[in-house]
Amino acid sequence: MAKASLGLLCLMAGLLATTPSLADTPVSLKRGLNVIAVPDPPPGFDAAALQQLLGARFVARARANSDAGEFDVYLPGSGTPTWPIRPAEGYLVSVAQAADVAIPSGSGWIEGIARADGYADLTGIRVTLPGTQYSASCDTGGRFRLAVPAGRYTALLSGQGMAPVSLPSLVVTAQQTAALGVVTLGPEPVPTVSMSLNGGQPTTRTTHVTVAWCSSGAVGVRLYGSSQLCRPFQLSDPCVPNGRKTLTLPVRGSRYGVSAEARSASGLLVVTHGSVELIADGSIDGLLLDGTSQPISATAVSISDPDPNPSPACYTIGPSANTTQTTVDGSFSFQHVRLGTWQLTAASVSAITTVTITRDGETVSATLRGR
Image 1 (cartoon, rainbow, N blue to C red):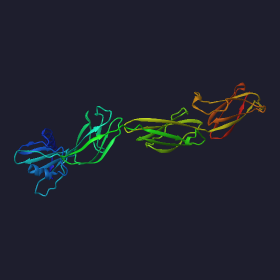
Image 2 (spheres, rainbow, N blue to C red; image 1 turned 180 degrees about the horizontal axis):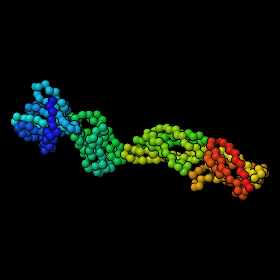
Image 3 (cartoon, one colour; image 1 turned 180 degrees about the vertical axis):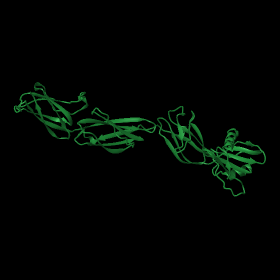
Image 4 (cartoon, rainbow, N blue to C red; image 1 turned 135 degrees about the vertical axis):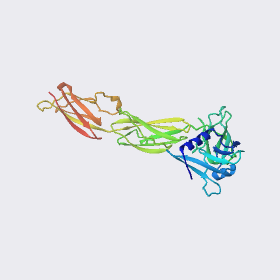
């Protein structure tokens, strides 16, 4: 192994840029040094095989790092190790006489004809080899041909509105064609999805809601939701065709809408909707007194959301009534009040206070003092 300067590496790069590659095409080598590339080497092709094919005195490759470089040299009969020939590298070879040579390609081909009922133009059908970068589009008549290195592949044919066709275990041999014949793509089935919230119960007093769904013809189902809580509401995406999920949702006496969105492989979309109401409420027992702590009877007391921008339409459950009258002993009550903070007002006696219900079934006490 010998050291090389960056200047020599740059010279090789310049020669490589202007020297034809050897790939199934005769190329003229001049006597002496030549820089060549092998863009499509056959399987197992190494420096020894290249030397024998060209009758070269030696084969060298250059490798560089940030500030230096080095040569790997294969010299036949010297005991130097060989190394694989790669398509992205350039090679320096020395030949005694000018010659026209050709290096056989390592590629083979996959070809076939796609058919789809109802489609006159088949250019929308694409042929891909999953796990590789190789792909091709059909021509208007559905014909396709891919050049790929020798190996084993799966071919996938797909198109908008068509059911994909997968052809596994295709063996491609160098310089040979793997003929698939006629491949027919049928129409893609429209995905379906059904969903059940809480086993079909429209209301529940628990924080847990079970969402069950099943689908056909779908590559994935996404759940998403909204609520009448006047704030964003999101569900995680299970990304599975069929499943079951338990959700823990904030309980404030609100209705939740959940949608299941089924999507096919080519993008067809079907959505179904459901809703469930999570009930959580309590009650308020109050007393209205004057400045001397005597009860004030027959006086209106109202309940309201203290939010400066209330949105009563956001909630499906609220107090059974917004206004009530105190009894002879000054007491009053509100039933079925959703969780949260509420404002109590007796306007005629300038009395006001706030109360908070924090859990389902809770009864809170409140005292208003007027003038």
